[in-house]
Length: 121
View 1 (cartoon, rainbow, N blue to C red):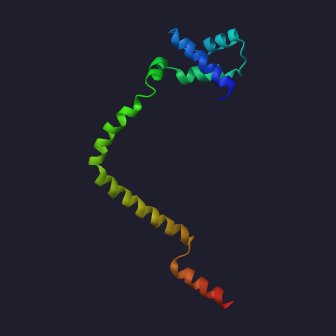
View 2 (view 1 turned 180 degrees about the vertical axis):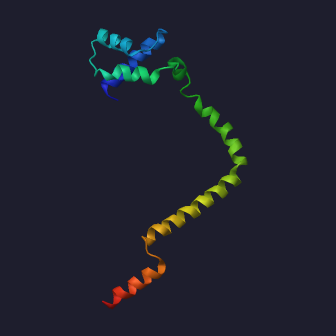
View 3 (view 1 turned 90 degrees about the vertical axis):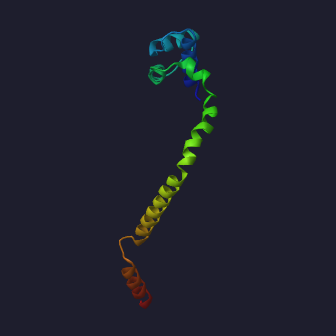
């Protein structure tokens, strides 16, 4: 991560910690006070990315996604036969499309004729 990005992240965290709305101007103000120079688009970019998000909640829930994964997997086990049938259909379609790609506009009959003519030369 570049220094400009990192500086904007820290500025946004400072604002979130103080329960201040994160805006491009406020990030720029913190960066100027810290003596950090960044391209002018970075503060606005970070402010837009974090607009409407609760940064404190995002930070506190960083590792909580792992606990929900096994519970989400249980319903999908019941749908496994349907998923297998769907994947088989997709494989068939993929194989057919690969065969069509191999033809390159020539049918099997045309390829055989072409190969015979090529051997005669």
